[in-house]
Image (cartoon, rainbow, N blue to C red; front, side, top):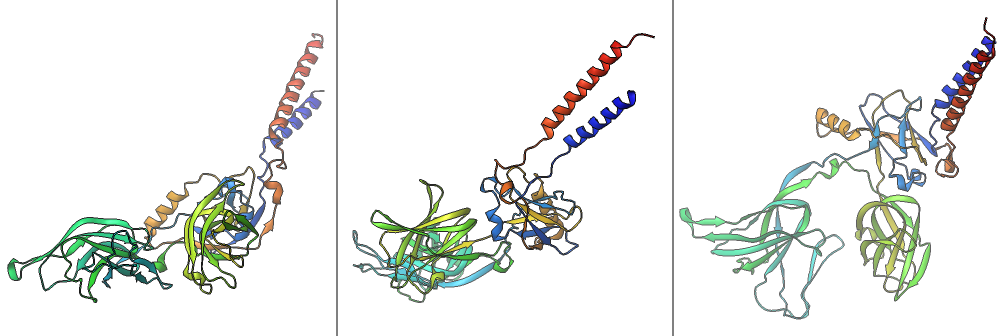
Length: 446
């Protein structure tokens, strides 16, 4: 009898241990990772089809890296290294902006296809020395100082200097700076340098607010700009990829037309271009990211003036996952335009813990990546190896189907039997103990 009770208790103990064992997490798909052994960290770009499985609400928290035994390794979203830069000094030609009469449209400033400054005079130009000059640095430069060319005559000027990336929006850099040259020889005053500080910009504007600029009649006048420029080749960023989409819907909207475009998955969109159809030469679009039936995100304005060269007109937008985009044109077009969507894949960095091979698991209703201090680990590696250190690049293999859509649906998520089974075992154990006590109480004393 005692042996039977012991067997029962042993069986219940095994059941309890099984009940307390955690069920493996459910994921939709997996990608085998190809890595070169020996690196201290690896970074992998998410494939395009992975975004169709990664839950949008999870913020890529349902993307994990596991080792050979299926255990998570330290991983997280990759934060790019700070860009490297080098000093640069260049001479740029000053372009005069014609003055205009009050109340009449002034000069129109725009960019050519190559990005050069084009100044179109207004309807009624005013005679007299210009007050505004523009110059093109040819590349985005973080300005540090600007030096005006020496003059044969004395000058006492007060100037404002602004910067721009598109010739439309201007950012003030300095106000009321003094530019003075007085006399010759030992007692001369020569203050032609103005210190600057600001974000990198390609275009600059010099506005004379006091005095007469001695270079007003010199068509070849220049300034010298000094600053720093980023090393494009050394940028730590994922390469931009492009998708060519045809319109999936066309709707009349007020006096204009809405053209809708649906992506196969919510991708991290960073840029937009438009290519006009046959017969259309110029168009202006308001770009909108559709977020729901009644809501949208204004992304900016896209102007296309060349039906052949769509790459000359790019609208950079803040990175964000978007799956439905809309172009609104105030004037109907002969054909729906094609939308070119630029996107940059997110990157996952991980440490080579455990045993290879490693796998990238994507898409889960409940499983999430552990909160590893991955940024601190990568910062320590950069500090030890130098600013030029980068994690070794890993590549993904062919997609492997796991639980598919079942891993994403809450209704179809596997039920966790651990807790109810544990309670059943505990109740049965209590019942067994009570039965044993009752049996002992019923036995006569010897």
